Image 1 (spheres, helix red, strand yellow):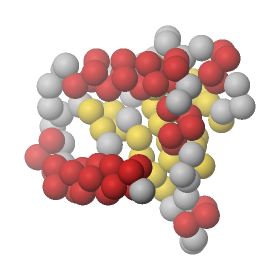
Image 2: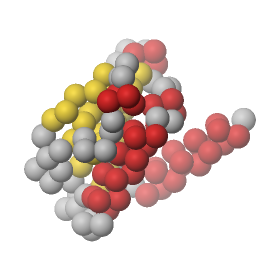
Image 3: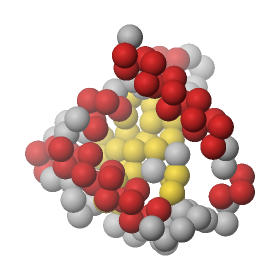
Length: 113
């Protein structure tokens, strides 16, 4: 998932589902030291459009636990909203709203089960 020209969250899977992990990009200025504890988090400036970013590596299936940390959630929300306010990127025409809807609907069904 991305906003403007920055990936907010993406998944990678290798040979087996147990080897899946995600990268969650958040605003470095908001995440606090307590919530960073025990996370694989690296501050970087890889994105010209968002130079103060922290990338958190999340093992498959653990994103809910990571986002339950208040400053991580606030940092993710701040980054996403700040980027969305800039408008669509040059790549917007390639985005699939249908795919995102399917992922979110699937997630909602899993959460209620």
